[in-house]
Image (cartoon, rainbow over all chains, first blue to last red; front, side, top):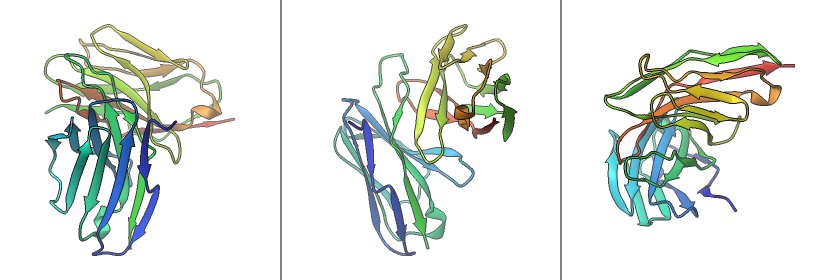
Length: 115
Length: 112
C-alpha cells in the first residue's frame, strides 16, 4: 500500500492550459502539504492543510489553488500554466503533535513540464 | 526567519570512504532537525531526526547530532556504498505548524 500517492506522475501540457494534480494519504495524518522542487532541487513549501483547513499559504501566484475535500486528500489546481511552473511537485503528510515534530511522508512527485 | 544552510555539492567519494555533509541552521528557540534523502526519480524519505539538543539521530549507518551551541546537525557515515548515491537534504521545523524548511540539498555520488 502506497502511503502518499500522487497522480499523475508525469504531466506535459501547453502554456495557458489548466491542470490538476491529486494527492491521497492513507496514514491517518491530519496535515497535508504541497512543495515545489525546482530544477536545482530546491524545495519550497506552497500550501499546508490541517483537517481540511488552510494553515500555510506561502507567496504563490493565485493561479495555484489547493483543495482539500477531506483530511486524506489534497489536490492542486493550476490555471493558465506558464513555462516557469515547470517543476516537480511533491505532496506530503504528517501528524502534527503538540510540541513534537514527527517529520513528513512524501509522495513520489509529479513532474510538470509546460511547453 | 528560519533557515538551513548545507554544504554545496556535488560530493564524490569512493566506496568505503567517510562521509560528512555539513548543515547549520538559524532559528529561534528549539527546532526539530531532520535529514531527508532523495534517490534518483523518487520522492524524499526521512533518513533520521533529532528533536532536542544533544540528541543523536541514526539510521542505515548514518548519524547526526543536534548541536545547539554550534547550531549544527552534520550528517556522517563511516563507510559509504554505491547505493548511498542520492541527494541529501537537511531540514528544520518549529512550532505546531510542522512547516519544514529545507536546505538546498547536497548531491552525493559514490563510485565503486
